[in-house]
Length: 149
Image 1 (cartoon, helix red, strand yellow):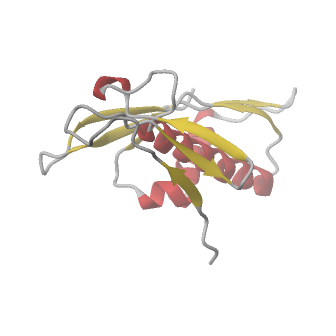
Image 2 (cartoon, one colour):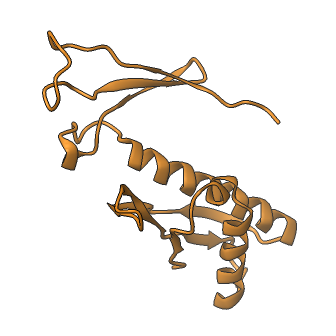
């Protein structure tokens, strides 16, 4: 299997590294052509205009789930016209009492070509199949909820 990498860079801006007195802002570069500004979540003092790791995790899961869903639909002959998701990461304490992403909610909305109808139960089953085969979902604990719209 291939190794998939990013480059991360952080540079201290303050005179000294002291608890609660330094910035977590950093950059993440993807594929040498896309750079994103990242910071802690706003609840932890980060810049709300920057992406945070918890959002990035939700985005990775949502994206992987969508690509898996589309691959399954293509095999089944389902003519997906559009796909939209609102993914939300929830922070809290896990069973060990540690701060973690305790749950990620996916809320996919799928539209098909005009004239194609699918039973709601079959659509829900296809979404659950996509979850079972998604690489990112398989890398996470069982803290993903899919709300099919």
